[in-house]
Amino acid sequence: MAQARSRSSRIRLGIAEHATGIIASLLFLAPIVWTVLSAFKPSQEARLPPLPPWPTSGFSVENYGTLNTFGDGLWLPAQNSIYVSVMTVVFSVIVSVLAGYGFSRFRFPFKDMLFVIILSTIMIPFQSILTPIFLVLTKVGLHNTLTGLVFVYVTLQLPFSIFMMRNAFDAVPREIEEAARMDGANNVTMLLQVMLPLVWPGIVTIALFAFLGAWNEFLAALVLMTDQSKFTLPIMMTALQSGRFGAIDWGAVQAGVTVMMVPCLILFLALQRFYIRGLMAGAVK
Amino acid sequence: MTTITAETSAPARPRKLVGAGRRQWIGLLYVAPAVALVTVFFIIPLGMTAWMSLHNWPLMGEHSYVGLDNYWAILRDTRFWNALRFTGWYTLVVTIAIFAVAFPLAIFIERPRALTNVYRTAFFMPAVIGFASASLLWSWLLNVDSGLFSPAVYDLGLTEKKFNLLATFQPAFWSIIAMVVWKVAGFTMIILMTGLQSIPSELQEAAMIDGAGPFARFRAITLPLMRRTLALALILSVAGSILAFDQFYIILRGGPRNQTLTAVYWIFNQSFVSFKLGYGAALSMILLLILVVLSLVQLWLLRKPEGVD
Image 1 (cartoon, each protein chain N blue to C red):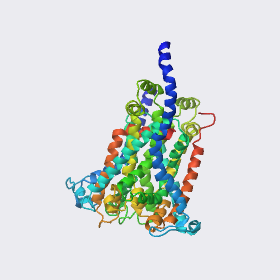
Image 2 (cartoon, rainbow over the protein chains, first blue to last red):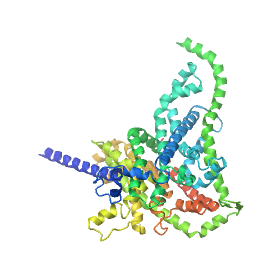
Image 3 (cartoon, chains in turn brown, yellow):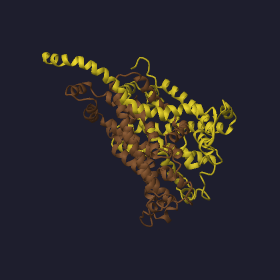
Image 4 (cartoon, rainbow over the protein chains, first blue to last red):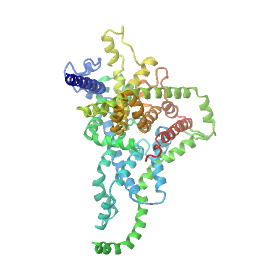
């Protein structure tokens, strides 16, 4: 009797818990789903309040077409965003792998000081040094170029990614290296053929953070990219949403937001393990 | 066995010593690109900010040394102090709101049960999209004519006409809070979850056997043992909020009536709209100082507990 009651109360508790979980999940997912679905409405319908969120007068990609008619179109800023994000990933991985290896495996003068300086830049908000960065970029002829923006983004990634990579290299047992050195491996082959396969989870993590950081960054791109042909997606979409290209077309905004969100969501779902790993590493240390 | 090691290591030793000396210096080459980037794009700009803050520095034309004039001007700049006060208020409210949502979520997903992973992923999804995307998305949802909230409430007959959420301060402010909580709670939740998971379950069980209720256990075990995680989540939230810009720029343009200008927004306006670069640099120095003090507080809060490694 008592057992039966405790069992039924446990089931009731389970139902309550899952109801809470499902409702909370829906609340968090709703705005994303709402936007993605509404973007598929025909232009006319997309202007009306999104009730219901799904298209009622037929499925259409008209909004993506409309989006493409504003300013320089959709493809150019998308291309800019892809270029900046991919280059940020490539350069921050190369620079951090080299630096992580250097800091983990070598003893050289000023080593600790340099490491602390690089790490402590995370305490300084980049928002407060944007003007001088603008002037430095002008000085070196990278003013208003996507490459200049890439350099800035890579620098912003370095404290986190060098910290990650140094820890990754530290975790590789020295015996593996010594064995390879016995076999005559020099520094470069050691790094590329022996170490890289062992630290690749760390590399995936820093690549993921670098991509998301560059893809989503707003203020630096807003300040540094003054030429419309150099706009990244967030800047182009904000210009559109502010009415810079005439009346605001909310259907085009939904389509643009979808284009900006979907790569992040896909990458996160595919590489969730690595993302959480990065967060944990940052949180524990 | 012993003879083999002796044979291989004996001739290797002198070579290794010479090689080792040279090899160690090579380390400097490996870290050189990183050091160069940080120097050019961080250290030099940082020095320049301090230098520029002592100058009258227009975008075009010559700059001139003005000593501490920019800093005296800041003292009289009531709009900057208003922006700073608003930033402080926003930081306080949003941090409390984020924790109020994230802590229960962290406790909810920490207990392993069916579907936990699905729930965790769902709660975390808004955290991976950018602040700009999230702001654009919500600027649509909050729009009075084409959005979701005002028309939905109107359709339900709760308001006589469509209520513009973004036209007056209070509803606009709380709309931003709602948006940021939606966007950030999942992130804070994961951080808090790592803290919860690090608490040994035997401790909780022992307390339960001693008859401690859930609230007593939370206060006596969970909170103290989570001090460092809590401090980290708190600092991340506070630092992020003090630097808030995207959502106020994209959704509200600092309005209504410039009431939601944050500190970074004001610096942005002075530097890149009015092109008073020297004055903007002086304002930046104040912001920098605030963040550095915050980081020092963080280091103190995150110190390892005494006697524990």
